[in-house]
Length: 338
Ligand code: 13P
Image 1 (spheres, rainbow, N blue to C red):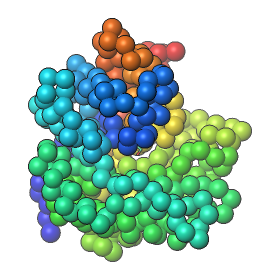
Image 2: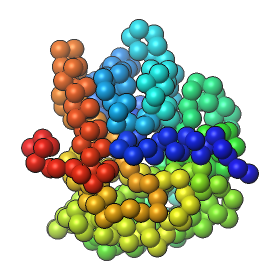
Image 3: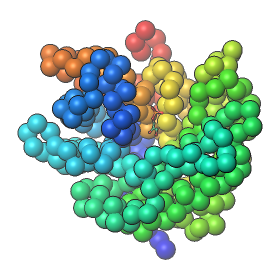
Image 4: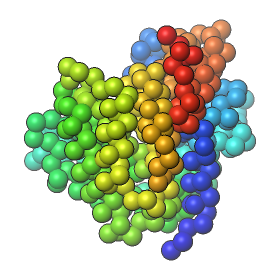
């Protein structure tokens, strides 16, 4: 089945110089973000934070889409304007995270599987009516001594494929996100091997279940040594390892690839994106879909204070501009913050 409407959305999301803001933390996770600036996890603080992000002046130049969470797609600004409408009015496509988080994979110590398929088709109808045009489902692949197992990668790939089928059937672009976790003491070689295996299994499964690859976006980790490994990977190493893994696993006909930041600092994520872009044109458009690497500078500037809102919004605009340069391979780190 051809999905012309999905192809249009994919093209808009993957516009040159633009990225996707992932502001889709669950209520628990956004609480951890607020806690970093000593703000209690209360509805008002969550709403204020999202309003600061979504109404920041100028961001439409650098953001093509925003991924929201169930509670925020239903939420409004202080003036009562629904968040999806605020974004759409500025040409930013509203998106929604649709998985319901992870649960332990019984019998497989340290591994998890993502859930949320049961009532997905019904939920998607409602999200479409609320203005969403794309969706995200995150699977978690952890690296440790004997993991990930193929069983875990395969189970998550089937869930991702089923999710993508349902999303496409509901006229919503699926972003399939198998996140290979950065935390750990693994080498970059091990990360490359795991990323490649994960992506190969994922795309074989997506094809098997007849998901329309052109109407889909992959969200993935950059390939780099674990955050506890003695030697942190350089941007050059990250770019080479990431693109090597991609070329051996990602079909050329998918809609696009976006990176998560995965716990890297904001500046490091930008630098690595830039190094990847500098390797020249690839078979797929490549951009970013950061959460922490966009939101942390905003939270630091804001601190929950009314008088800091303008500064916080400028921090978001600045970060999205830096990432826009990086997406084109023209980022100059001497013009970034220290
Ligand atoms: P980070 O950029 O913080 O890794 O988040 C991206 C994301 O959407 C994870 O699901």
